[in-house]
Image (cartoon, rainbow, N blue to C red; front, side):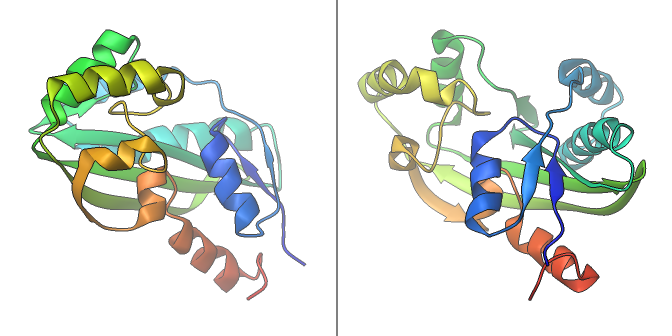
Length: 199
């Protein structure tokens, strides 16, 4: 029988991916100051991969400390373009600026996942996807943000590929699940090898 994992995230899409893959789980979001961790690491010139990995680890460790014996999955995603890290937009205006900055160029999404058990990391993976946006018109970007703000406000970069955001893109190189914020195939492989998931 498959072992339940705890998802240390309030992300609806990550929970949906786990459910659709038949991975038993419950949700216990970790409360961490992501901005402070990100800012401290940026000040130390840490690469985007390390920032995503650290944020995922901190979330998993925080919940693992309260859930002895459980497998706790922490996740985080960062977007890097031209040496700049993008965050979730705070306002529609910020989303519009971010999309304009990304339009016509290529950026990287890094999706980190860390599993902790009894306060120790036992598995980690950072998936990387390269995405090239088409050059969208100003009018389209204005309308896109206006139509989709309530959904995209929770997404780094201000778009959701699984929704209308797919129209912003010309090319995607990498794993679709990683774009959505969870390297699902690698997670399934780890759980199956350990015997925590039938396979």
